[in-house]
Length: 375
Ligand SMILES: Cc1cc2nc3c(=O)[nH]c(=O)nc-3n(C[C@H](O)[C@H](O)[C@H](O)COP(=O)(O)O)c2cc1C
Image 1: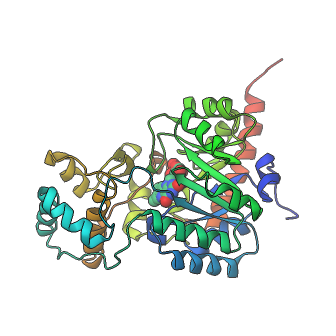
Image 2: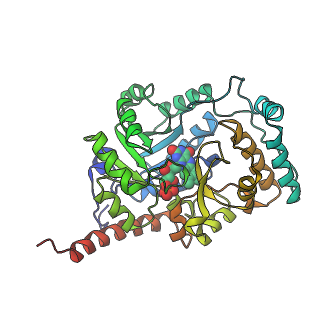
Image 3: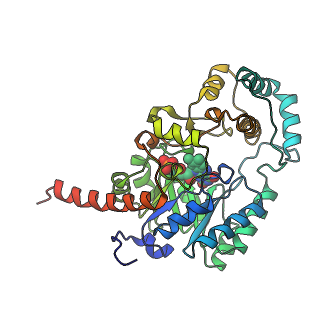
């Protein structure tokens, strides 16, 4: 701690961390927030958060324990709690695939056409588990059993988890994309609301951060707000603090960290890409999700088909990703990332990313004071 610059807000007191910077818990099959990255962010004074969405409960336990071997600082786990699952079927991949083949045959046909066009053999995801209420309950149980300080709900209503988490002394965080959802998350008992703007990578709402953050701050005061989306340097963090947030939750900025395990081709798309190449669309999961517009996404958009609702579309996406990964055509792999990708130009270790975020925020805060004369 000694010798480190000071950048302290109420979030630091709430979470017992040095800097008000949280690593967004990004699902992505465990690759976006592996233990080494989560631990590096926590060891650098921020809050590392494991993205547990889509992982088997025991895999989440293993990731938490691996992270624990690397840091004794506070860590968190983010889960997506299912909402509006449009299925009455026993949700295994096999039954969902059969349903898609029967009810929406053009969708798998489209995927196969694309695989053929690129000379790729079809591979189906082996795991039968898809997002379901039972799986979510089992994931939550693991998080509550292990040594975790923050539970984050990326989607859905965490009210049934809040009493159990509080009993264990955990802080509960709810992600929102609108003031109305922020009020709901506070009513559900969340201790902190993460306001995630339209600019953000992954699933995203419709309101950009400049209008979103102050409205959420006003809607939930005195519950504190952390800002997410479109920040990768001290200028963005300073803007979020000016809008009333007490900290930030960063995804894309850490996707290119050296500790990150997303495919190198996907990291390179972020490093080379321009902001306008990262648009929201529903071909990933059925819900609007911002990702790199690769050739497969462009072909979907041109196809005239409509995206399937959750969880069907994701079953197709997962099979497509498994196929391109097996064929080493990773430039076609789905790559969720935010508009701020346009500003990210190199790989760095997470510790350096953290140090630059902190020093950049301090410099920007001081620069604003020097620039603006308020008499
Ligand atoms: C690859 C990727 C995966 C994500 N997965 C999740 C997730 O599983 N749960 C969640 O709450 N948010 C998820 N998000 C959204 C992040 O939590 C965060 O809000 C977002 O990355 C912030 O915007 P930024 O990318 O501009 O920093 C994901 C984002 C990305 C880029």
